Image (tube, rainbow, N blue to C red; front, side, top):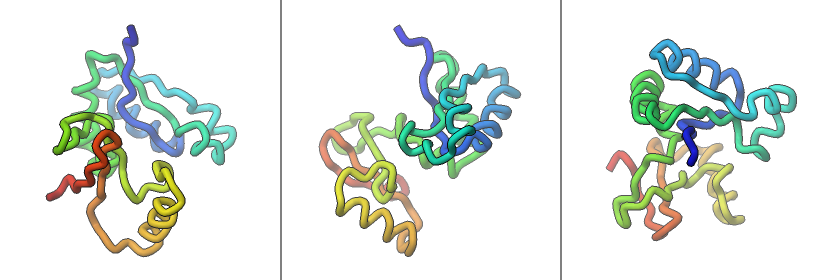
Amino acid sequence: MNKFRTVATFSYPAEAAVIKSKLESENIEVFLRDEFTIASDPFATNAIGGVKMDVYIEDFIKALAIIEKSSPELSQRITDYIICPNCKKRKVREQQDINSASGFIEVIKAITYSLLPLRKHKLYKCTNCAFEFDLHE
């Protein structure tokens, strides 16, 4: 049985260090995976999947609440706890994110949306039922 759960992922160790210090100030023990690998080779972040921030399972909900309160923009990137409104599964990923694009067309859309931000809100897509939705609607 796994006693840790990943609460967030970061592209750079410096981003993770800020949130780690906030969580530790709230008495939540935090473990960072792949922190030193990405610090030594920042271009490996996409291949490795970023710096993973793990907490004990019993602290997971508390950690999510603290992250959401202290860093709302980061909580928009956390898709592990988002439930699909159509099928009620937790298999959601961001659309328009270059790291999660699964095909050539999605990569082109992700690049276009990153260069020309036409939408303020993020779109999400369920990998179980392919339903697309916006959290702000």
